[in-house]
Image (spheres, one colour):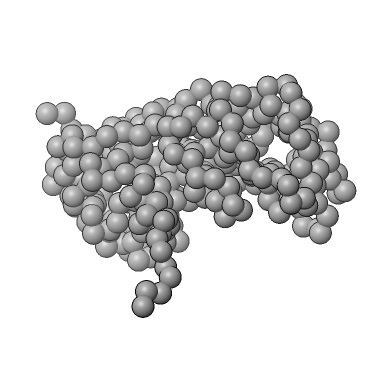
Length: 295
């Protein structure tokens, strides 16, 4: 049987994960796996945490070819792993050593079971859509894709921004707000949810358009098919505003139109047989729970 290859990415700000890392590496070593570790994470484990870590090789950038990617941290670490995977299609297993861990839904005490299931082939792959951003002038800095959302936000002053939205070349509306979020189903349980956006089920082939603190009461979130193109034209009193892709922010200037569409690839996520999106909703977000006191 061919050895399985794993790429390991982790959060370098969580010292408590050292036991979980050692458990994971031990389980993979027992099975003769090849383990390639992100260089920054490796040096954190060895130099800062003083752990005895053996790696088949170190990963710089996105130059790796493996069977599975393991993200060890929270959802932010998962998003970074997804960015590094890009269009490779490599399935990602998220181990949660952070707080909520909606994407990274394997807890530390479930690592043994998750690895056994991987080797037994007892898992499924979920496909998550990705957003692609381009500018009418120039290019976004770095990686122009987002698994969760693209957000247009005001900068550090009290004035709102004006955001004109065109869908497939047709005028939708102009938002007067602190910002606007265009989110995938994956991102619907993140930033968009915190500003009252709708929950979108993975695989629904939809996008959410959600205003951040809109000035008018009759502005509500809207759900679109994800095969549309969305153009945003922003006006700001400061002549600039922020564009955020999964939390990676950069400044953009008035006059530059933002163009959004579905990316030509998806991100693949490992799902265990006993898990589901709706179970995660109930378990992580307490969705549908009646918290009223019973007497």
